[in-house]
Image 1 (cartoon, rainbow over the protein chains, first blue to last red):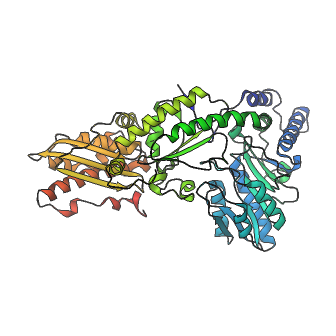
Image 2 (image 1 turned 45 degrees about the horizontal axis):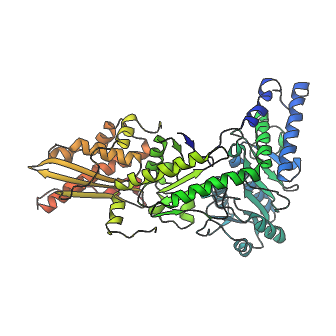
Image 3 (image 1 turned 90 degrees about the horizontal axis):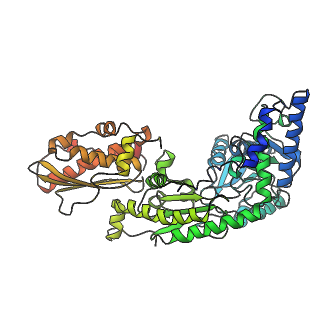
Length: 396
Length: 144
């Protein structure tokens, strides 16, 4: 059996998305900036895609900027808000310690330019409270940037509450919704979100395409100079096939959110129940406020990369936040941010499901994963020290 | 996965000499759980010959493969031969390791040396301290 359980990394494209792309490679291949009919047909499609995505997010078409993906959208949102704030002497930015690196590294760059970045502490369950944001906001705060849902541990943050506070205090609010978009309901106006990033390949769309939503009136800083595409805010000929694929995938995901969420979270809960029986393990992230497809565990006494390699041999394709999978010696900053010690953080496993996973696949994982964990524990000197009482277990 | 050579995958999935030796003549443990790698080597030594060797490893695929290969390379050899084993030789025998995994082969070399040092200490055999480098000289672990 083969089980693709790495949908938080990327998803298989839907046939809806692929079908939506094909005409824009085969016949309507014009450049939307061209005046002739082939170009204008593409321009019309581009307009419709923008309108559809805006409808799904609850914003205006002109508030949508197409980017190369979530990372570019995060970069542009944060840099824009920082430049905008600096003009008024505001150079304080609030974020969290467990954002995606597209956010954290951009903030680090701004820090070097003299911005003050305050990273809020994340609770053990992988969330923060709106009160923490409220308490951190100052006169000179120019931006609050907080992810909608965490990419590793799947916890969902109280975005509407944070949005309401930012609106009340008059501070720009950006959310990296790469893991949330297409999976949980988002309405930027109702939830008081000023800027939002999303990426198509997380909801069965193509890779290399994403969206930056920015509320009308927020001046965007240009990161890619050139032609006047995207209202002059993002140069480069529009990737029409990818935009059409994204638009189709996003509409499909958004109209099926309830049904998919119900199905996927049932599979998720079954998987969580099954894996919770492994002794000395812990579920990371909040058990209630959690992405429908996310399952994330730490297993004491083993290391994540070897776990992934053995699961790969059993046909289970998963992810880990261990150091060895990242190419550094430090385990995931997300797990460290929620207070997992290094020893525990090294033994992590993320399984992320989509609506195309089945109950049989979940049963298969519940059967195989404990076997692999036990096999690795049996060759681990750390495990021997734990079971012989030389060292104390950290996890129950 | 193309990350590792076939040899690495072979030694990772079918590791040789896994286990412990209850009445070992020398035991060496290097690395730490914080960095994500620990290797423990057990030696049975008779007449200066390594008659048996076992290992336990907490770590990534290349750490397990390096331990397996290193134990194969010293089994049946003399103590002197075992002392000559280098991390480079272990990595070469595995048809290479990715650059950021070379520290796994360093751990394997040092785990064996630590076990031999333990044997010397237990049997009060004099030796040159400088032959036993400390694992934490390894650049990969610096700062931890």
